Length: 168
Image 1 (cartoon, helix red, strand yellow):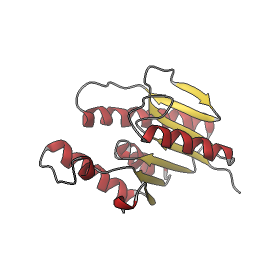
Image 2 (cartoon, one colour; image 1 turned 60 degrees about the vertical axis):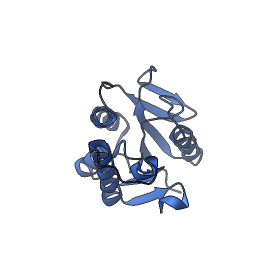
Image 3 (cartoon, helix red, strand yellow; image 1 turned 135 degrees about the vertical axis):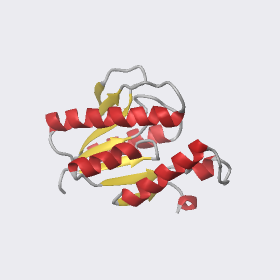
Image 4 (tube, rainbow, N blue to C red; image 1 turned 180 degrees about the horizontal axis):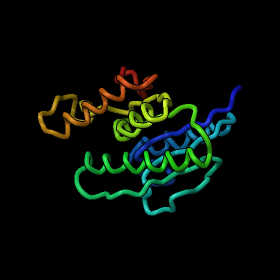
């Protein structure tokens, strides 16, 4: 089996910021991939920790950014910080083979890196904005923006993974 250098992008992990179920999913998946011989870098928020740690073989690349304002503005700044960190990490470690994002939060990062470096990405949907809002369509700006990013990630990704049959 060929060893891959994998960049994983998530707004949470067990070793940064924990919000919900994405955190254990990301950290446990990364550790499982390392156990199979792959090199995995998790790009995530800093959460009061150092910018870099290697934990259970996984390289945690924590990306500090301004966390003021609403969630969309925060994710815009997180995405910019992730792109910057990725570029620096790729200079040190070498070219990445594949990227893997989790939910809508890092979609802007994934698209920029796809077009800038020619690296394909997979996107895992853990939920959708529609589902988080009681299976209803919202008419507010954040709903439309987050839903658009979900659509964009699904459209631009090389593969889509869902965590439940309801998301198919």
